Image (cartoon, rainbow, N blue to C red; front, side, top):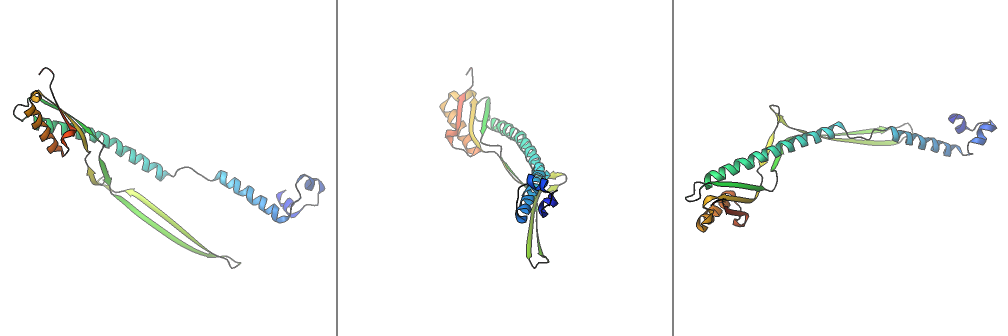
Amino acid sequence: MIEEWIRGSDDKEKTEKLPNMGKKSKYLLVLIISLGILALIWPMGKTPEEETTKIIDSTNIKQSSVETGNVKNELSRELEAILSQINGAGIVNVSLNLSSEGVKTYATNKRDERRETYETDNTGGDRKIIEENQTRDLAVSTGEALLLEKKSPEVVGVLVVAEGARSSVIKEKLTDVTSTLLNISPHQVRVVPRKGD
């Protein structure tokens, strides 16, 4: 039917139903309809590589938050042990406030591909096709991602609860030692006495 319509049929019934168009217009209409069908069929979803990358990133974030809790607890215990050794400090508890989860930089394998194709058709037309692909994968060593750099989370505030904090001298010592050990300014450290003191 389409072929007859494009060629121009002699059958009056068929030509009356279809609009009267020139050959070029008919070819153009068929081309537009074909492109529309192709656009509907063409896959538009994410590639499996993009989905895989997101999965890898989300697992790294989960591991990172668990490690942040470990870093926070370890740092608190170490600080408590040091501060409790100060003469007159007594029993000491420390709570840290961290700005972020820290930063981890993993090694990646990067592969760039570039392909150029030159084509000449029968009518003398030339066409140059350039195809570029970039692939990045996490570098793996002994089954685990290769970690290049790991920055610990930044401490933005410290609360020190100590038995000897009623004394202004002990309070000042605890503040100075804490700010020195964590490399933060003294206004980021709050020292308060323990309950019952």
